[in-house]
Length: 529
Image: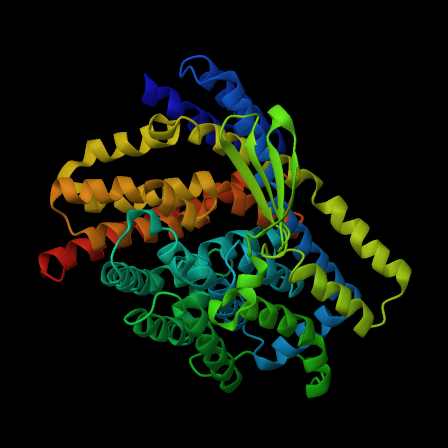
């Protein structure tokens, strides 16, 4: 019964969102959050105040994704208002008018690099609006970018899912490195299938087939350096692989290597200085993301400094603490030991999006009235995503309530119990479940890493392999996680289509898991792990 009631809210949510004339996410998610609250209070007998504390924690947690969405929308509005989007349209058309080349450059290689620098859903938030501005349908862009943003995720945000996601397991440096090596291998193989598959979600299969050589050259331009670097490092594979892949993908497209010949529109070439001026905000974003994410540069430490600046005691409500880096923490919410925080300077919202927009308004001399309009339109666009995310994150917090007997852990342990020593077939899907709930590969690894470790030890399976499957699963789960779907739909202003997006991304996620299982079984058969 506990398993049935744990699964019920998720099954009902998916039904409500994907059925014909499905409920919009900003209605369905708050409704399911209320259902989970009732189940936790009734059948699972969790304390009333503990649940209320988790509801408040979910509200605070909503600040992270919604401010990122706002920043991305604001950036896109600025790029359009300044005329930069039209310049980029003409420039990309001059590089190659072939849609496959444009999709691989922006949706694959560029997003790959941004994921390596930032994570947090930033790649889709930046790449999706650029693709939409090039004339691709917003709904298809949403699906395409979600599916593409899977391969680099295990090493996203400078490797955070790998080195931080498994930190509670106290693994040796050698084991963590091996987990990264195996994760990279599985992703490398999966990319050969997932990238062409993603393209068919936005262009015809015939078009992909006619340009197959370029597609695979672009894929390998990212994944070969990605895989090679993962053999010695688990922080920079996605960042470096994406940067190399982006450069090579642009050069190959410009030379027409492996691409079907398409006549260029009779447009005048765009002056190099004009292109550089239009690209300046994007360069600013990338530079800021990189310098604030690489620990060795020292700025990251300043942005996540937890040294207390001041504290405000709220009595029975808990305590508000503000660090010197403006991390706001609500500790011991309602005196229930539940905490929530918002990293004001580190979450990629104020820095780099808002800062870049503010500087760009000055650089491009946008009138004050137009600047105000950019902000007001951006606020209006994020209202419905805010309600959807509020429901999603409250639901997640409530399903995680209860510690080792939480609804999420019940689902995970039951899933593992059914598989037994065949666990390698299914391990990645547990990681995907974690990402579906939390919207994060890192949180998925934190939540289910211990369960995966215990299963590996109990069944005498390779610990690094099982943990690699967990990490890969958390990455492929990005395709279907509600936070990401709501975010990209919010950025593209695609209304009431979250359920339809989920239907489209679910099959590629399943395919990814099958590939992961095949690679794992082959490694076991060959005695490589």
